[in-house]
Amino acid sequence: SPARAADGTATAPVVVAHRGASGYAPENTLAAVDKAAALGTAWVENDVQRTKDGELVVVHDDSLQRTTDVEEVFPDRAPWKVKDFTAAEIARLDAGGWFDPAYAGARVPTLEQFVHRVDQHRQKLLLEIKNPELYPGIERDILKVLDNEGWLDRAHVQQRLIVQSFSTDSVRTVHELKPEVKTGFLGTPPVADLPVYAAFADQINPSHSSLTAAYVSAVHGFEGAHGKRLETFTWTVNDAAAARRVAGFGVDGIITNRPDVVRDAVEG
Ligand code: G3P
Ligand code: CA
Image (cartoon, rainbow, N blue to C red; front, top):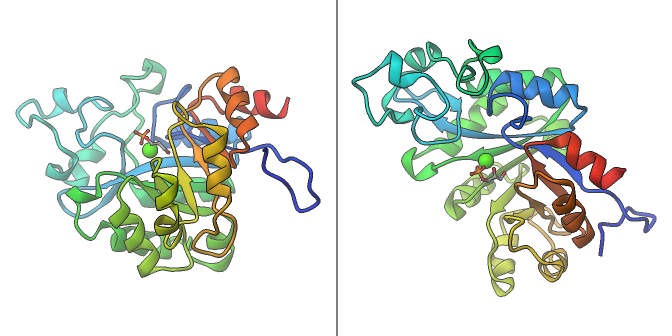
């Protein structure tokens, strides 16, 4: 059944711009955050990794090859892993031209730049720790940047921040380091295992492709790490029919490259 407000009425799922509004602007750039804001999207998702010299940057793949011009700028550095480049080197790359020449000059943002822009727009952040096995200690580094940027104050942690990962260890580590921060586990654990996840996570965030109403109901039957109903945000839903389908299951959030399409489908 759909999510219910306190008075029992059904509520539409929140809409999350996946890697920013990445259907319309280059993923994980400030331009994609701006586009999400222009479309009125409350939440932005991103992917965080770490450079050779310890800077946190927002980029999806473990290599810079697909979403930047790194091959042209550093032809001898294959396979162009994020962890093998310094922040200064990454700052030279064009992260927009591959998507559309109109976005040439867009940069790979640092986490600091990214959260600053999300804050300027008064948006909320669904931060994904990507490939944490490559970056030992990245959870502590991320929390430090969030703290420096004012994202660990009461208003942010209660209303505007969720940290998620496909890595159980990473989600558990964040919960242990900063229990007040809401967390999400990316995946579809068996229902029998949900109590284990609910001990350190507030959300179970599955792919929409094999999602069922029964699974969403099962998730909602547990309390998450903060004593509230365990939630579920599903990904990556880019067309109206799929959005209506998962909204009918009662998901709490829909992560999408096309936030305008999803919002029209679930609120229209
Ligand atoms: O937010 C969930 C989704 O982003 C997970 O998949 O590969 O797009 O990071 P991916
Ligand atoms: Ca992601």
